Image (cartoon, rainbow, N blue to C red):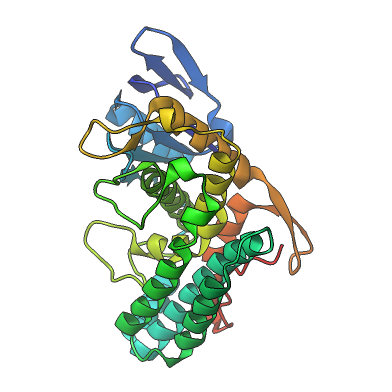
Length: 330
């Protein structure tokens, strides 16, 4: 049970007997193998009813909804399979202890900067000179321990991300000029891809946290809010360089996406339906890839690494074992 199913077409998704059926606008029907489903992602204009939601809850399947502008709009989460008051109490106590919260937040930033640096180093060793960016990332990583509060730590992370993004125009083809991060809406193809990719990583992280007894709204680096799963933002930051950015680099440099896969007539730049499907398929293939985990001594998928990150945090909160973020080792 670890497959994601993405629905790009418009229509209706419904329960029929003991399975789920997608009915497209032209009447074509497609059945989803729910026995393998981890989550369903709705990208098109899709109708559904409470009978479907109840069935997804019974089956433990999450449903993530994306809006017209490619942004994550929300999730319909099943009742959690694991509930633990002890875990939630420990989670809140750690948030409410400024020193403990800062310690955990520092680990998130450490993992994020390390994985950004791994990407830059990869291209530095392949005919690029990213000495300045690498030095800045090293400087920002060294500054983590000096941060005295979460706001200062966020500034450290932001400085690292600016240095990281400054390398994109050299890494990517000339027709995908980046010129810095913009969103709401993204103003060019690369920013559009980053926004969409980050939304997918975020939604996958929401699913991973759901598999544990952690509360996704209690976070440490990002401030908890009323309408978001802020712990997913914390953990997703570690994985964006590994998942979102690596797939973007690969697809654009191999010309598997072109500027024809974007449209710019909607007060911004967005992926076309074909472009969205191409990127999503590539990300799903990456999530299914495996690496040998040195501690577990077995191959694990990138998808499982997301869940493992949540388990590590939970173990830290309950046992005090040091939380060590994923730092790309392969």
